[in-house]
Length: 292
Length: 292
Image (cartoon, each protein chain N blue to C red):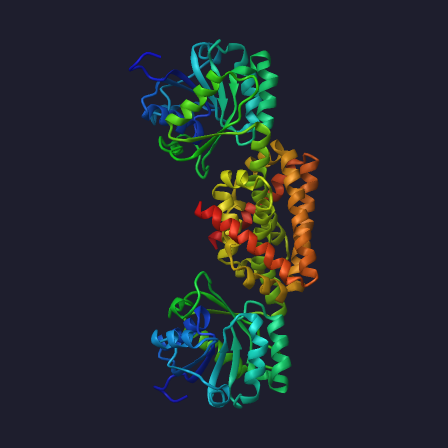
């Protein structure tokens, strides 16, 4: 790179919504990219993305856009990634780096290995941790990633240079970069994100199917509101995430059920000391986390 | 009652903190009480309550204060109520009504029956649903109960007149009055309050005891924050609530575990249809509740 030139030439984004669109806007805000080309499911979305300045133009054919691309970000729902990887694999240039924004990594890596084969070194998986309450190009914001975490989960095949380029791109968007193996990533997010969603859906469902459900909801208050906020999340998206991270989630679910069994035993035995010990340790950990 | 006079003469409050103090201030604001006498565990608390105008004076001896009291509100932690009921039982006047602010009802009713014997008709149990983030007399607010729910759980022995007086007092504080049997109350609150607390404590504890706990907490985000907010609740208080409502809570916990078993089976079988169905029904119910 010569002084004065942007860090990146052409960036290609598959999925120009909240995640992909904000990546594009963040790099543009930093003056770090020459051109952003977008691919999406509908012409209307791509037109909106272009009108909003999220992309410079819509791509027509991947065969014509990838050879000279610096970075390709696949920011679609995880379930669509295998097909997109297969579509783009034949056209990658020798220096093109592919990365993704999926919230599970084991399945994405498997799909990438299947599609990219002996060019797997060009794929650097990543997971930007950013809320998803809104979607579509109009939800994209140049500052979405400022101060947010992005977890890069490198593969053994990745060269340092490819890894550094992906980290640089996210850093230029203002994100704090972390590194985990794909396996550690999936275990951690099963525990702190996927399992809580499952547990929250389960509680609301358990009440909602009762004949006298209304009676229960009438007296639900602020504790219930906080605990179940994530049960208003998107059912298809969470179905896909749960299935994509099935093995790790099953392990976390079993660990949690063992914890519930222990609490049930303490309660059935009137063991107040043990209950207080568990609650007290949880409270301390929750407070340390919230204060940290 | 003659026109122009307050609805209540003397009110006696055991526990002059958030719950009892706000009851006193609410009635004072409404001009509905002549005198509020407070009992508490420490002279310092009672002095603070008096300086803040929560009570008019501190009581010294229950034997001298209860005969002419209109309403006695026991607003201490539930675990202290049996002892207070036993202390006050010998001195109730023939028209004195006792009520409470406990968040469980079956155990409070049992303690009241043991203490009041054939005067149990004078005890009208109730549960004001109001947050408890702060405590002590300085947390008391005259408008704490405005628009909040108070669940009165009458006993078969209660005369309509006694029930109406308790409802009137809470209405004058601005609360919306609901009526449930003590059993229905405990079942409902086990499901919508006590169980979620238990589940939230369980999740944080399950993570906190791991050797690599820090790794998990590092990547916990907004969903985790909402889900675990109630895990920062007071351990002793929640130990007491769980034990006080043990039977109903065990039933709710078992129902919830059956729901988790079903989700585990669906996940293990890759049954995305069933997962989406459960998540979708939960989301719809959560949205209806939040909008209602």
